[in-house]
Length: 422
Image (cartoon, rainbow, N blue to C red; front, side):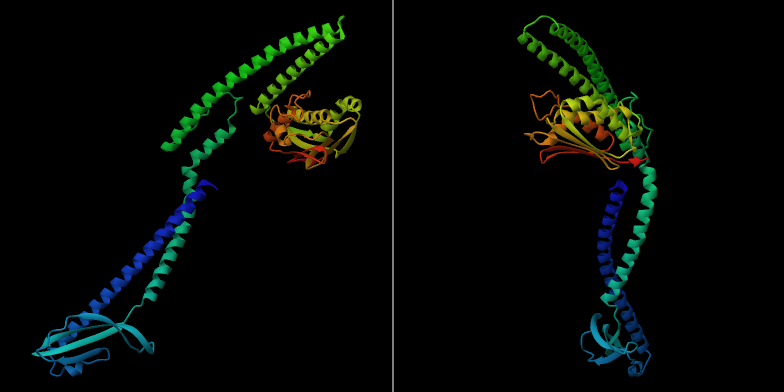
C-alpha cells in the first residue's frame, strides 16, 4: 500500500472517531440548549400574561387553549417556576404528543393566581436525525476534501522522496559515483539524503577494495595454476611409473578444478555487481541449438540420448554473455549429472525453458544445489557453482527458476517472460 493511501486511511479513521464523539457532544448540548430556551420562552409568556392580568377586572377572559389560570388561597406560598413534561392534544398533528409544560404562581392585585402553559417538545429523535444528517454531510465533505487535497499536496511534499527512490534505483557500482540528491526544505528528507550519500560512499569504497582484491587474487592464482598445469603435463609425457602417473593426473585435475572455481567465482561476482549491463533481443532457440552442437561429442561419448522440443525463433531480452552462460551451465549440469546410458529432454517454448535428465537420488533437498558450493556428490568433479550462476542470472532478469527431483529425474524449468516467437 502506498504511503499516501495509509495517511488518507488514518486521517479518515481519526476523523470518524472525532465526528462520532463530536456528534454525541453536539446532541446533548443541543438538547439542553433547546430545553433551556423552551423553558425561558414559556416563562416569558407567563410573565407577560401576569402583567396583562394586572389591568383586567376578570382574569378568566385571558384563558386560552394553552393557558390555564387557577386562583389559589392568598395565604398559600408562591409556587416557583417549574418545567416538566406532559401529554396533550396537538391540533395540527391531530394526536396526543409529548409537550413541555411550565407554570408558576403570581400575586396580582391582592389575589394569588397559578398560571401554566405548554408547547410542543422537540423530541430526541428529531435532534438525533438532525445531528446524524449534519455529521454525515460533514464527513462526506471531509472525505472528498482529504482525498483530493492529499493527492495534490502529497505530490508536492513527497516529490523529494520519489526523486530519492529513483536515484537509489539507478545507483550502480559501475558508474563509481556516490548518490547526490537535490536540496529539500524538509528536515527528515535532508537527514535521509545525508545518510544515503555517506552509505553510497562507503559502499563504493568497499566495492572497490573487494573488486581489486578479487581481480588481483584471480590474476595471481591463474598464473601459478597455468605453470603448475604445464609442468604436470610435461611430467605425464615423461617416463614415470603408473602410480606416479595417477598422482600427477590427480594433481592436474585439481589444478583444473581450481581454475574453474576461480573463473566461476569471478563470474558470480560480476553478476552480483551488475557488471553485465544492457540487454538485447536474442534467438533463444538458436542459442540452445548452438550450445547443443558444442556438447555433441561429449553427449555421444557418455551414451546420452537427446530429445528436443525446440520451437524455432523464440526471442528473449537478455545480455548475450549471460544468455550463453545460462544455457551452457544448464546443459553442462544435465550432462555431468546424467547416467550412462541416459537421456536429456530439452524443451524451448514461448513460456519456458525446461531440461530433464535421469540421475541418482540426492541426499539433500535439491533447492540447496542453487546455493554456492552445494552439490549432490561431494566427491564428484563438479565445483557446485553452475546452478548458482543460473540462479543469479534468473534473478537479474526477473525469471522464475524451479528445480525438482521427481520420478528419478532432475527437472529444471525456467519460466520465461516477455518472450515472443518471430
